[in-house]
Amino acid sequence: MTVTFLPDFLWGAATASYQIEGGAREDGRGESIWDTFCRAPGAVLNGDNGDVACNHYHRWRDDVRLMADLGLNAYRFSIAWPRILPEGVGRVNPAGLDFYDRLVDALWASGIRPFVTLYHWDLPQTLQDRGGWPERESVAWFAEYAEVVSRRLGDRVRDWITHNEPWVAAMLGYGIGLHAPGLRDPAAALRAAHHLLLSHGEAVPILRRNSPGSSVGITLNLTPIHPASESEADRAAARRKDGFVNRWFLDALYRAAYPADMIEYYHALWSDLPDFPADDLKRIAVPTDFLGVNNYTRHVVRHDLRGVEVQTEYVRVEGAEYTDTNWEVCPAGLSELLMRLHRDYAPPAIYITENGAAFPDAPDANGEVNDARRVAYLRGHLTEAHRAVTAGVPLCGYFVWSLMDNFEWALGYSKRFGIVFVDYPTQRRIVKASGRWYAGVIGAKGIEDEQRREMQSPG
Image 1 (cartoon, helix red, strand yellow):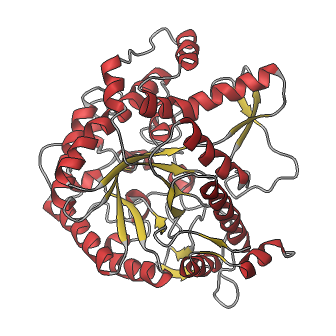
Image 2 (image 1 turned 135 degrees about the vertical axis):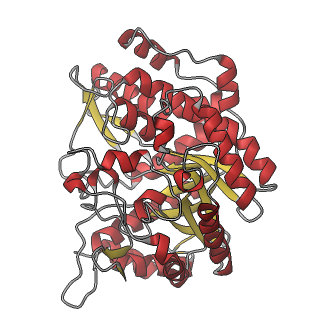
């Protein structure tokens, strides 16, 4: 049976500013926390940084043509906050706004709908010097930034995402120290998470005022959590992990409350648990038009008192396939997640704003990149996305991560997620087999029988 999506389904690809733009010290851009973090010894694999990345700041015209050639009708990208407000607040950098102004116009001219993410982790360093997201003042900083960007682009941008993955920004940045700014303070991480969500709530009405008729949402990294066994301890560990990664953010956004079991658990861990005023939670739960879902895998966990994340330990599933980032390939987890969101939280619309896999790609003797494993990954996940649609989930679009290989945060340039290969020394782009396959899916508005048969063939 052919898997066909509705004619108005959006087919896109996603990127983020620090991961692709480069131009780190050009045209008045200020420093971000990732510029600083990359200079810390041992923080990023091989000492890599985003100074040049994919040089999209200079190659954006070619990249838009590449998107058009692939048939994309949507493109999700983020704005670099320090390119717009070099000191974080106050002085506006006209050159920064001009860059995104030209990009948005070029996308529309190519029939590509821009999905703009305001914050994909590149906080201006000047604001981190003032305490960063754990400080309540950060809510006002973000509101000012949203005001500046939406005043300039709001007449043409119809789709806004306030934040990308606040769990990662807060927990990995302030709690575990794996991401910028590299702090290890769990209580500060919870404050940061709260202020990220509260700043989302403040930004939504700003975006609606300056961009009338647009759709506004937020993107969360969401993962099905399964217990390694049916033991009471493992089931409790899975419940905690679900609260840590998923429910803490979903409940705040859709129920105006943090999960009671996690509040109790955190209070037992830290005496200095921050206060979460009820009025804040009402502001966080402002109605939105869609939920963005980033999903790559599922987590299988068991109880472990030594676990750094809510006393759980990840379990490797015997016989399962894993990607180059050691994430299990589990397409059924995506449909499970989408149906749970529809059942438990009922967002009016859902977009898969990131889904993809890292594999060790390299051009062959003919200069082609035959990434068959990524093709199989994407095919499986799109098939499961369609399963969710047939079950009634209001899924409106899919954005593959990523348009091109790029700077993968603390992993540097060691992992390749793109459907387009980037030869970093020359900046040459090569469309991978997965890119050609995805272009075929877009043209067919789904996965045709022939493609489905290929999925089941050996190799």
